Image (cartoon, rainbow, N blue to C red; front, top):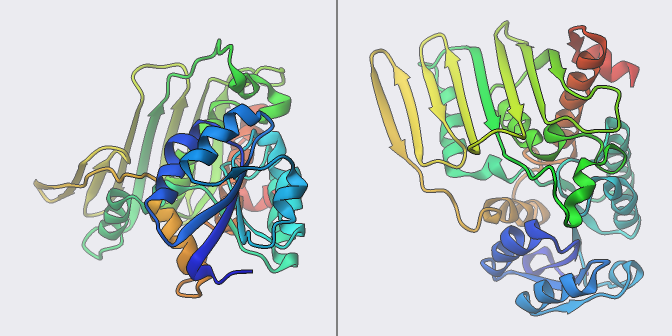
Length: 338
């Protein structure tokens, strides 16, 4: 295989995320090239392949047998993440898995264990961690003058097309998607919340369509932090307009921002400090640069690795379990029982 300094990719899936977000990020990183794009709908793969100056592969075997490919970005519906991810790792490739890692915690664990056994790197596409505004918020929270985190609140709305007649109708099928708004888009909020506040140890949640074939449109949760603080999260997939609103309160300060907004507000005492951060474009470039740095040995994969992706899936599982049982769920007990 080629040196990671000239990283060669394969892509499985040519949907909107690849076409509008990942392809522009790859085109902005000259040290990366794409050897092939695979999608069961070849007419969808070809425009992406053309934009990336590469070919549309005809089969999974063709992609996996290509010795020039070092890492594969898996951007398929959720029910294929475990099956195809395991095949990628078995072929000796590194893997960037689209969020979530699977439909459930068992699938996510299989991926993480297989990557470790194969000696391959597993990354999960939680690219928002690399946004400048998120990094600045994390820096502010870790300062001594902020104090211990005591309360966190995150409200997310995302008006999804629940009558979608197009190919993404799989999102509304519990068997294919594994869940609704929390697995589709809410995992980004959970990931950022855990990345900034950290140490979530107990969860209590409510959501709709429990025990049915339909996926949930909304979920609300409260949680307890290891340090004694608490928080709330509300995610709704049928509310207008789309927004992310996050506030993290410490004993001596507060940070407020939206991951895709420009405005970061830091409050200590009576006077807020407002800083401006332009949303990054291409949006996945920070993640891409991190992956290259990890594969070059310049940094460790402790930001978006399998361990971090698995933690998010554990939190999702705790929310669903709590909603079904009506109990507060301890993360430690849940992990031992699953």
